[in-house]
Image (tube, rainbow, N blue to C red):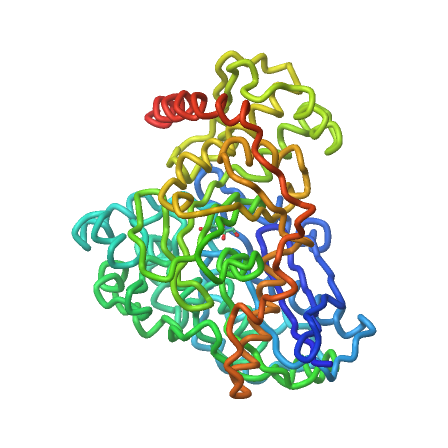
Length: 523
Ligand code: XUL
């Protein structure tokens, strides 16, 4: 039975899923995760990243991602699965991060020696040892320059799907050009994390897909091709450094001889990788309009599928959907790390966290918190800061509720344009297994919430994309509804219904929260 491999390089770790699919309903047969901090301590990351002293710059070593990929394929080789059945491989990665490669990279990728670990051979391929990642907020000046060159934020959004955005690849590339001009000119190719890892697997430069490509402020969102105007506004001589943009179902090559000989894997198809949010869109079954996806991961994101190109707002983004069409997305930086911080500071385990939500009333007696443990993306808040009203910092249960209510109210308030059309919410990510959290979500959004079955949404989405691309390459035009049938439907038993009395409480409270947020984000 054919196997399809999905990989997901998230902020904090790398996950793999082998999916059996084809003549039988799709089924996960192997799953494995590596954590960067725990499994690769030599790179000295904290939650998968390096935070710099300015409080704004956040990077990660691309070599660490390569080391993880090598170890993961070794684990797959020892999984006991019938490796010969691995037919196609695709992937998902944290969005926006950029990887800068020298001219030497192409030759090295073609000639990887299976007798030596991957990282030992990548010493000379990087023109920049650190990759800025999605948590980086250090490019405000470059965003303003790009917006000004393109005719203002509204024009940048119309052209690229987003206003110039700090974490996006374009402003990051501009900063690199401005601050490390020599290294910029020594760069032959700039990849996203997704296309970089696909390139390692294929042994040659892989394309970028419109799902992840839209997170660069460089792609013309309507044409799904590079925008010469946006490229000119970003940095000189940039066009030749960008990999081609290709459909998400493009077969970029076959698994390079390095992986075949080193790990005994077959010459499987390498399908273009995409971003983690576009892959989660597939996994949550959002291949048609109607549902709103909410991912509670390192970042919290709200997203929806759109057939026609929607307008981007000042906080929302439009990406290409890897199924064709578009996806709208709003991203919040203070996601799982904020929930974790409060839980740990108050000395609770996860069952204590749930108990705190059960023991406190909807609306928290009017108490509210702005949980900006990190500078926030939505709304844009340049400096970290926790703000409380009517909330005793030592009241553990009330603080837990305050964080969850704040996150849900912020998501509901900022995703109005997306949620307006949606009938139900599909939640995914670590915290979605917590029914108390989902109850707050249902009450704040006034909508039924379902939990996507199983974890690792982006990874499974990548495996489903590998399956879809393989079908196409065999001339079978299996529709997306068929591809996701039987695996993405959230179980009916996971449904959480809104409670009318709570909905009424949050209707008022959302407005008070909006004003509180507006006041404090102005500084
Ligand atoms: C989306 C975003 C994050 C990362 C997290 O715009 O920045 O969700 O993709 O991996």
